[in-house]
Image 1: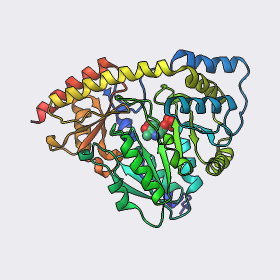
Image 2: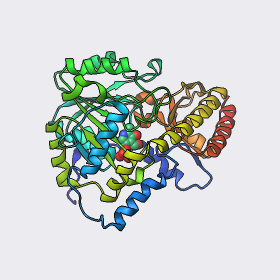
Image 3: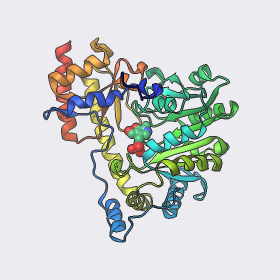
Image 4: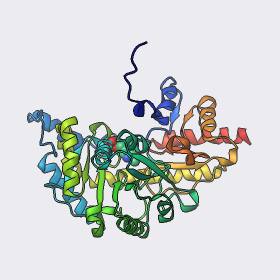
Length: 387
Ligand SMILES: Cc1ncc(COP(=O)(O)O)c(C=O)c1O
């Protein structure tokens, strides 16, 4: 018999529950998809043009492993301007291939076999697998609708142990759209310091908040030695295909992340970095325009869901609605499969984001108003058929 070459800890990982679903969608043309977590907007042209200009100017070479100095400077200026956060572009800032790479690097830089990392569910699909691939132990703290899916210190206290090294969190949250208040963030910061942990804060949706000014853990000075900020360009600037992100944090950790990045990646794509400078320095009005449109769509979708009897709390951030489908009596997966097969609307079962997502369905409103209206009509027909 042929030798089994596959590493057991990787073989045991499940495939993403989102992809599984979208393999079905890809085979059908009539489907309206509320499934994909990616802006329907094209990247604002002046940002793409910066990449074209970079190419015309011969920008086809590697950059510094840490990322172009001009980009790191622009990122630090932006973080200061938007969040009042201070990071040194030399030594505290690393440019990565999307936030996905930044998450992976941060976890690999700090995890020794058996170290526990607390993360929250429902959450972005990569967290637990990434921790496992680094031989760490993912420890799940659940969030609930009764708390508007905010992560509470109570939930963290229940999960912390002598093996806990870090907390990995994401607010505004994919898939729930939940945000944290300034008081929630202060409480989590105090908890982090009390237990001497590292906070890994994935703030990729930080610009997409619909009430008040965006806030960041990086604006809490006491966290300076205990925080790695993970952020990027995919969502707020509609730049998913550029694959550009960054991490900011304590020098020793950034330097260690850089070592892994240096051996595995070398540097983020040069063209993308040039586009990133333009986005940081001149992208505020584009972000504001897209945010206003997402808000309009969110309000429409939540209202439509509530009117058809699917009680849904108004998400305060990101571009997802986490609709409560428990009144239908169907499981999340059954709901999504029947909706897809019978009414040609694609959503993602809440269980793709953790077992406590049962009873919920994620719908992305990063799609045109016309498609949202069509999806709402089809959803309404489906729900009335069930009652
Ligand atoms: C919470 C969260 N973090 C990270 C990512 C990955 O972002 P990027 O495209 O920057 O790698 C996503 C993408 O869906 C996400 O939702």
